[in-house]
Length: 184
Image 1 (cartoon, one colour):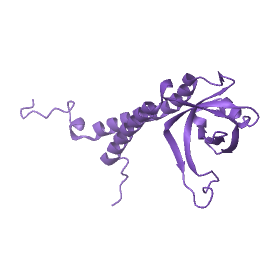
Image 2: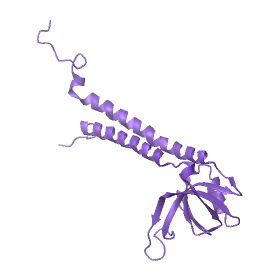
Image 3: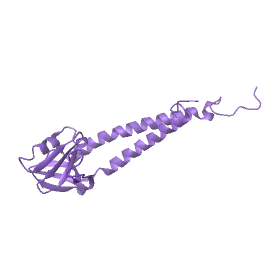
Image 4: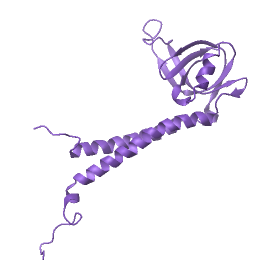
């Protein structure tokens, strides 16, 4: 006998736990956003860069390997500045605690990146003038994280509604009260 488990009580609990998990993911993502005091600064010209679908990996002349995620650069100005930074020096603010490690099989990884540790960039400045403020970068990350929160709330509410609709007490007459032995 085959039943649709999404329409069953198992599906209701699945959506409830999915929603709770997405809300927790939002909390973790918000917690990981750094404060300005936590950021370090690196300066130099870009000597190597590789762009992928969601990130721009690059190396400065002082041998710092960094990654600028498109998620935190909604208008693309910081990525464009890094692309042009082989002509002039830039300074970047990064968080050493958040890194992406690429492993090597021979000399480069399977997607063509240099091996090593890449630190997440949260700000790019040219001549001491920031291309985007830390609050703009945080806002871009936050907009993206709010999608997880909205999906989590929607899934949790849908799961809660289904759990309540499928529970035996909810289907009783009179709003869940047991029937009286002496009915008139």
